[in-house]
Image (tube, rainbow, N blue to C red):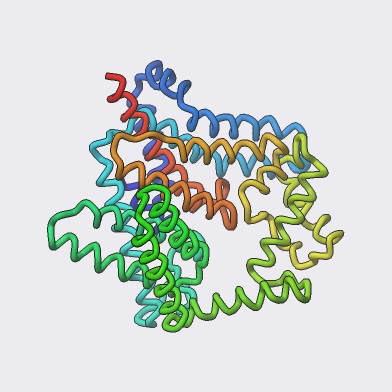
Length: 387
């Protein structure tokens, strides 16, 4: 619960509660039973394999000290996944979700204070009021929080709580569009559409109403929010410059350039990749040859699939594909948990395709918390079904 609360607000608390979770798991004992469960869990095994294969890739890493630091500093967080699987008690499900919503609410209040210049925080500007992390991650977390609120509105009967969640949804949605993170805006809108069409199987009447509602939200956001207006115009100008002038300096255009560079590197190193550390060195080499000179400062390809394909070759490409396949195919007895799991998986997939992912702290713990959370619930449901 404390770990879920810490994700949006504090990197220090994330580290603290990560350690405490793992230590408490060790003190809990009963390892023979736990290892039997872990050996049968695909989600835990794929991340344990990622750790082991990354260690094995030290054999061809061009910078072993960097690679060791990369693996040791980042990947130990993946241990939370088998810990959650074997020790999470499902009676705490609602408390985990509520803790995350409370933390997002605190972030939202601080964000509004910065936006309206009521206070300042860590030199965060009103034009991009993401208080505790970069705007890409904050907007992604906020989009998932909005989905959680929608599921609560579908089930809560108490009028006071319904009013609270409606108010929270309105303020959260507004905060999403005054924020500089377009990733969260896209993930929220796309996830709502996907859930409506494929999961809830709404009639065409309701789907049409939904599209009109979302279109209205975008129009209002464009005309009311100066931040959203500017980011939308920047995107339009950037894409126009990319296609007409071959200018890849815009935000999304830079991602396209990084994906082209990464794809070229992977195709030249398809079997074992460049090794950890090699992916950063190759950006400079290939960006110059492809005339993307402004990419030299980048160390990340802004796409999980390309990042791991470059780093670890074909196996690196397959690993995230398996991760998302497992997430999307988790089975639940409770329809609400299934819908939340699908929503999280959709949001994280879109996030992984255009932003940061497994090896970036905020994204990493987002996956380790809620990926592990839904995986543990699914496992407990399978135990109940078998009994």
